[in-house]
Length: 188
Ligand SMILES: CC(C)(COP(=O)(O)OP(=O)(O)OC[C@H]1O[C@@H](n2cnc3c(N)ncnc32)[C@H](O)[C@@H]1OP(=O)(O)O)[C@@H](O)C(=O)NCCC(=O)NCCS
Image 1 (cartoon, rainbow, N blue to C red):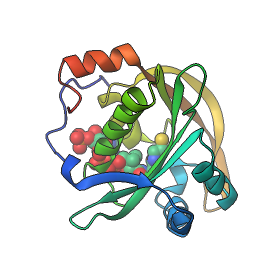
Image 2 (cartoon, rainbow, N blue to C red; image 1 turned 135 degrees about the horizontal axis):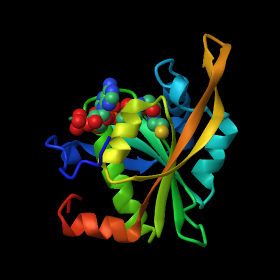
Image 3 (cartoon, rainbow, N blue to C red; image 1 turned 90 degrees about the vertical axis):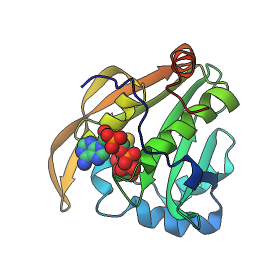
Image 4 (tube, helix red, strand yellow; image 1 turned 30 degrees about the vertical axis):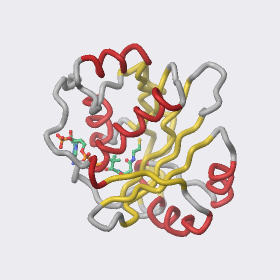
């Protein structure tokens, strides 16, 4: 699949925002994370890991709010916000509603945060190769595939091991982001 050079026609920017996660949000975070729809694509954290990510400055843990009344729609986590090499990781993005353009808007806001606010040199992530939706999203938002960590995560179906999946490592560099901004592929 090729990188799309066209921004998405759907504009959710006016109805999606990120706000810092509070400890009182963690029941919501864990319920979204452990939802059967999402579990195949992520490795859920213990509550204490989320608590750490809310508190430690190397992380940014956000609730995604969307819709007319900005209801809680999911959460995102950045890691490496103080990385000495400027390598910031999109650690996790999990949304309740799928296929409505919220993921794309989240990724766009997170790129802006990584490069403009955190002054990242490299914004990277890994994604399971079976996660075709997320892969398509990241590719079309300019992320470049760096490599494949072969068979690095177990596939579990109904609690039973069913082989292994590979992780695809992807990144966007600051100069690539700047080029996308110049080409107006990134919203202002
Ligand atoms: C992955 C996730 C964040 C994407 O967010 P989303 O709101 O569902 O995605 P969007 O509606 O913004 O769609 C983005 C693109 O994904 C692709 N896509 C959407 N649904 C798809 C599907 N069922 N199959 C393949 N690709 C799909 C399309 O290219 C789409 O862009 P387009 O509609 O403009 O062509 C969300 O689905 C999610 O939370 N999934 C479960 C957890 C997860 O996988 N997290 C990522 C781990 S790396």
